[in-house]
Amino acid sequence: MRLMIIGQLEGYISQAGKIALQRGAKVIHCEDTEQALGALMNGKGADLVMVDVKQKIGDFIERLKTERIHLPVVACGVGTDARSAVKAIQEGAKEYVPLPPDAELIAAIIEAVTDDNSKMIANDPSMKSVVTLADKIAPSEATVLITGESGTGKEVMSRHIHAKSKRKNGPFIAVNCAAIPENLLESELFGHEKGAFTGASARRIGKFEEASGGTLLLDEVSEMHVQLQAKLLRAIQEKEITRVGSNDAVKVDVRIIATSNRNLEESVQKGEFREDLYFRLNVVNLPLPPLRERPADIKILAQFFVDKYAEANGLPTKKISPEAMQLLCDCQWRGNIRELENTMHRAILISAEDEIEEAAVFLQSGPLSSPTGEAAKHPAKTLQKAPSAPVQNEGAVENLIGRTIADVERDMILNTLDHCLGNRTHAAKILGISIRTLRNKLNQYKDEGANIPVSATGQ
Image (cartoon, rainbow, N blue to C red; front, top):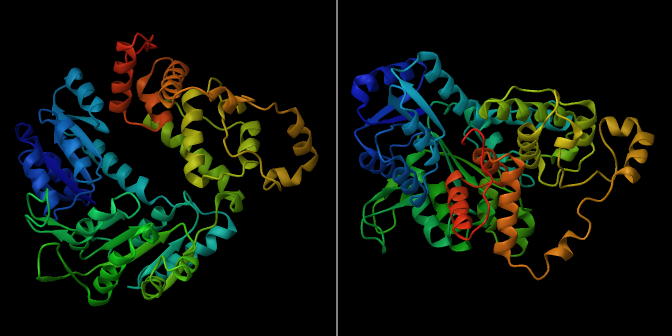
């Protein structure tokens, strides 16, 4: 766990740092956000940032996005300045921590970041066998290729392997090859020198160098351009990289884990993926089963996500009612664990009963064609349920014809906000957008004369 602390904080920085060190974290201190950005771009990586609320947190978070540096940011400040705390949260900070620092609170934050990234739930036999193999090969230096549909937990499995490896005290660096533009991915992986290309105003250390001594995850490696695949192959084989704009080789010591939601053998046959790179990555293959083939895990995962988001939103946790659980077990989960997570996040926000009721569970995937879990034991019950469930929003697609995307988006946002009783934080999470994006949209709609639902709590 690597913690970066930014700011002076009237001497309390050293206290927070000591507490984090006692909890096993590696701590780096920067005077301000500019120094912090420079450190991050030069290979001083971090898993969590704690920043003085007096710093320009919003600008800092925007710069992180621009530089494609993905880090949770926690604001902290002396005293109980509620206005500053709210402003920091609105600008993108995950939490606000009052100072002087409380040892248990610092420990809880560090533990939450660590647990969220590596929590592995595998009670179903189909998943247990995969985890057993992962645990067996984790201490080795073998390159691992994790395959499976989107949302099956490939990155979580990658972090699990890292945590069980001899490199667990080193950095774990993830690169989403599908999310970074082709012309920037080479720089992201290998770094660049100042002036190497337009916009390269300073030298930047790439992910290979940042991950040295630890693990580098190449997420969705199948999306990488063939020309860059050749450079990646050389980096893996020679254990050295060359920054863009430089002729000097730099030695690196990383363990590679790659993931793909495609059939890479088919991609090789089509000429979309290099065969030699495929064999270099596929030393150990871990195929993750889709959630619909892990019926024993659905109940445990569902309750795990309910507990997680109840705590995150300051709500009392709830059990899932038998009727709602049956609905979850009957679903085909095309979006896998990610879809289940979103479903339970939404359910805990809108549930109005003592237990998560069936009405709070909104499904997109529909029922399985062949029931699993409890549904398989009660086929008559499943058959009775099917005809009685009315089709929701019948003809909804036809009703959208002739409307602009902007109009549909506006109605979706306003209806969701109204459904959340005006609570912007909850609405943003359901919509899958940042609170800043939601606020900008609402300001736009307000200027256009729309009625904006108001929260009773002011959030």
